[in-house]
Length: 233
Ligand code: HEC
Ligand code: HEC
Image: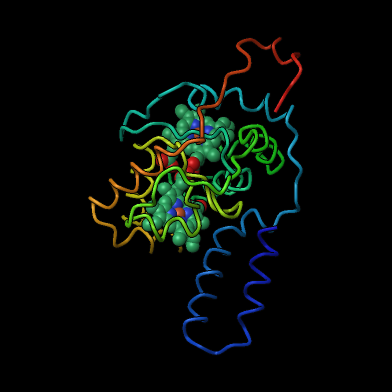
């Protein structure tokens, strides 16, 4: 899907010679490079039941309401309702080192491509769907952001992460990381580069307050035998 979208975008832009369009293509290609790690792999269908078993370790952090990372101190991101495609991309980014967070890198390294597809399908649950009725006016500082992340904080395409209801401290941390180029993404690094601390506060407050939003993973089982229970998405 992603690959096709990018290909058609690039192809339709090639005919024209204006600089603006070339820049647009460069951005599209840059982000294409960031997603190739998983886009080049064959489309894998996630298996919910396997994903549930694999999620057991993950839930030790992602399944605890308000669980915080010790240093630096911020809340572990919510994954329930996140775009499946984005979760897959994120795990491949940890695996390849594009995202440099040691614990998550170790977790991702232990997963095969199929494991990642399975765990992403399970964690995403039913990804959030935009209704077209924003509950709050979009603040000026977030006006550009909503062209991809949506006025309801729900990505306009599956490769754009949902931000609605995400922990404020995690959003602030992510934006700061792009700002400092510690987390590398051609689109987001340029988006975050010129944001002032006041704008970041406004943006974080806006997206984290939107509902319906992302949620902490429920912990459907506490012992191994609970795996036998019927599984619902
Ligand atoms: C020791 C705690 C811990 C465990 C265990 C853990 N995670 Fe994480 N996870 C984190 C933290 C902290 C972050 C945010 C890291 C950062 O700032 O990049 C994160 C980030 C993520 C992200 C990126 C979310 C986003 O919005 O970009 C995904 C996806 C993810 N974890 C999935 C998993 C999966 C799947 C597992 C199990 C295989 C797992 N995690 C195990 C702590 C943990
Ligand atoms: C052209 C589309 C686009 C625009 C505009 C955009 N983003 Fe993003 N954003 C993305 C993509 C793609 C990613 C995933 C990048 C990655 O994998 O690191 C992302 C990731 C993020 C994340 C990390 C989410 C997570 O779960 O870790 C945050 C936070 C974010 N964007 C905030 C913003 C803010 C704030 C703005 C406006 C200043 C903005 N974005 C504008 C495309 C966009």
